Image 1 (cartoon, rainbow, N blue to C red):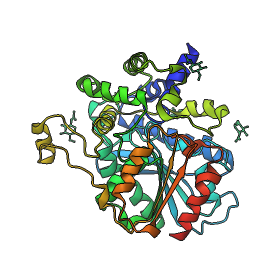
Image 2 (cartoon, rainbow, N blue to C red; image 1 turned 30 degrees about the vertical axis):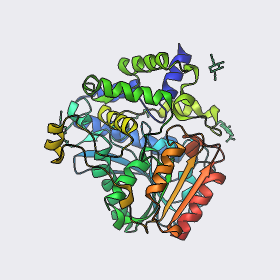
Image 3 (cartoon, rainbow, N blue to C red; image 1 turned 60 degrees about the vertical axis):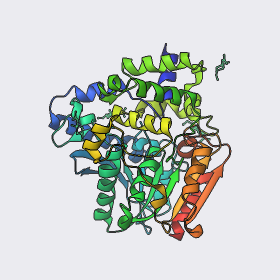
Length: 408
Ligand SMILES: *[C@@H]1O[C@H](CO)[C@@H](O)[C@H](O)[C@H]1NC(C)=O
Ligand SMILES: *[C@@H]1O[C@H](CO)[C@@H](O)[C@H](O)[C@H]1NC(C)=O
Ligand SMILES: *[C@@H]1O[C@H](CO)[C@@H](O)[C@H](O)[C@H]1NC(C)=O
Ligand SMILES: *[C@@H]1O[C@H](CO)[C@@H](O)[C@H](O)[C@H]1NC(C)=O
């Protein structure tokens, strides 16, 4: 049973689900003030448990989005040497169902956040709305359905601009951006609308996700089908949480239906990670997975089913008209990303979520990009989690990434 539970949890590591215990603990406090003071404690604890414990200085920052979500960010303003940063700020944006901890799990010589701080960058780490340290809101509580009424469109419209602006206001410098997985999707979408560019130097996109139409992960596909087929049921749940019965049943059903070997769900979902240190799994599971909005999961499911990259589809022409003034959701046009924006893309041959064919579709749409502003790196043995947790990611990905930042 314990083993099954661990597998269930690790399944969602980078794609689906959330931990019940922490949530119940946090939400059992009544009222918004209580929630935001709990979430303050949570982000303090990222600084304390994940950063200061490694011998680094850590600052906690709060930023309120235009739609009222109070997000926490961790800043590592200096490296271990104590020398003031001589390089620009870098903003790290995690993927789906994880949080800032994702960048801090390995040793300082292996984790990107520490490597950047030790290289003289001023490091800022974001936490998406709904994660443990970003549960606050000016008027809503996570127990309200309206709190979970968002998909990644809102991360593009509200969360990203808020975190960019916070870093810019504090440092008065344009930043380098690093996104992983969902953190790449929201950046591509924002850049395609020419947003944030005035505060941006360059962007590194690891496990890039824009198109999901070819995604081969059989479990993620089956989950997408289930979300779409029963979207009204899922939407009624507001918050997407693996710890909940509904998600556990979903996982069991799709394992049965796809005849998958569910003793290794992590691999079935994300691909075979070559280089993740399995003796750190427990530390990971102490912090992740984190909740997301069901509406966000349905939005991703729509992308998997249709292969398009567009805004959330309300499911009927009338409702889309009401929200968008047109019968179908507006598309994000990747070809509109400015050709002179410095981009570093790194993708892996074993990644079942950022599939090689989908990345190729993205690269095709970027075909007019200035060749000296686009670095594309392919690593045959890497899967989804290796880009963040790989024990050799410094040599494979981060050293080239830092070299790219130095050029821009
Ligand atoms: C959430 O934050 C609390 C501190 O308020 C911490 O004790 C707990 O471990 C965190 N949970 C997760 C899943 O990160
Ligand atoms: C969710 O947000 C949309 C606008 O994005 C709004 O039209 C709708 O009424 C909201 N629903 C709930 C339940 O708050
Ligand atoms: C399922 O995967 C596990 C671990 O990867 C392996 O030990 C087991 O033999 C597999 N079972 C089947 C039926 O393939
Ligand atoms: C893997 O993690 C263990 C436990 O934290 C650590 O002792 C070991 O050095 C790590 N291995 C590598 C290659 O980083």
